[in-house]
Length: 140
Image (cartoon, rainbow, N blue to C red; front, side):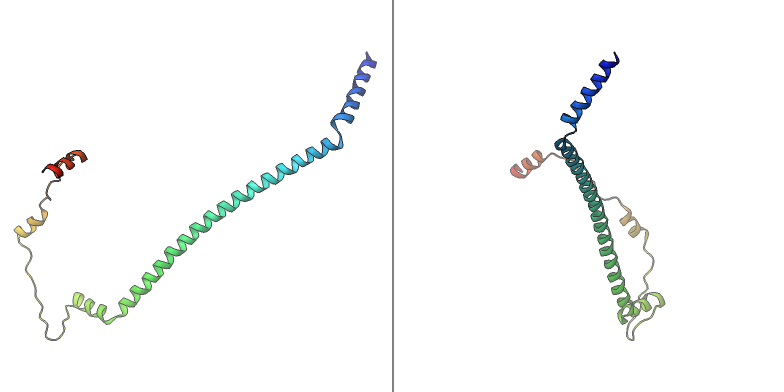
């Protein structure tokens, strides 16, 4: 019985040495492992680059918005420095006038004027199909 086990073990060892663990098979396994390593590395690098590109686009958009805001604030600041703005502000807040101008003070609105603008707008006609609209257009 022991001889059979030893013989089977020797056969298995011979078979594995001559047929399985050959230089060709070992090289093939190494090539497959290297290819898998490079593919995984490439996929990881591509995913990282894509995420960085998305972050870059987002930051560029934020930069563009902030630049527009800064330009708008600069223009607003320049407008506040103009004589036109200062004159309008003085007229509105302090009641100042230029020589020769007259101030007109209007009485408060009457009840009829207040009600006129509080009335509901005209009702929108109910929805009609496109076909019925064409029929009305073509045949009156």
